Length: 315
Image 1 (cartoon, rainbow, N blue to C red):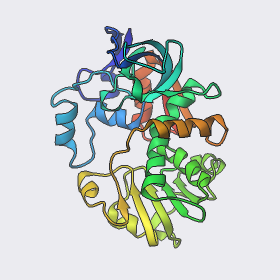
Image 2 (cartoon, rainbow, N blue to C red):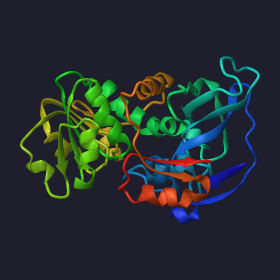
Image 3 (cartoon, one colour):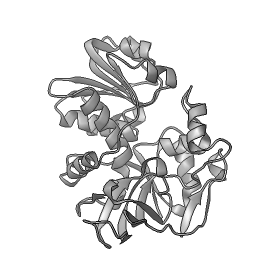
Image 4 (cartoon, one colour):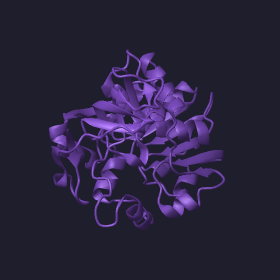
């Protein structure tokens, strides 16, 4: 099978698409033919070894000290079950599914094998591209807004980085939960963010965020340019600061009215997001869709830091 392989950390141009052995599913696993897979900011950070401050050593120990321990990245994908292991029940060849592979990664390829317990059925009304696109940003936004902040009717939410993969989902999910949303993005993306449900957009290129007099019940930073100190200055008296991107020190100090940390990968969350997409209540925003042969271009787009929504690859 073809796969995007990285033999050493570095720039996008180091990624090569080559033939590798097709994985064989274990007894509890399913082999899935990948139809669409996201290239996320997390994939980009791992490929380039650009880890948040303080995480460099533990990340190298986890992912590989001198070179990637897992040369095929990619975790958020959608596809069709090719075969299943002897102990798998509930899924069969031909089923359309999507999933996140977690630390195992391996989805930037034509096939991926993973535990069947990680699979969610893809509704017929949801395209493979939309299913792959909603997973990373959608689960992250849902975790922080629902689990960490309990966003509900009447909550005022500020989304910093409202046009990215996490931000586009956060704006819509906050609105779905009944909140009023202010998005921080560039003027070029203001129309998009407004169309997703933001009542107000702050153009960070012309307006100093800290000159804004309004205070918010929830501030979600999807970019990583708010510190705990600066983020707290934007909060209402009982507000909550959510750091989707945080360095080690901030993660350790994220207590009280600050939350950070890793998003859990739960099938129930994926199914919830897929229902919203199928019902037309959640729009999956795509920046560009590439073929696997153009994986270098896909990474270059993600590395540029100005994509709108998701970058997706079709193996």
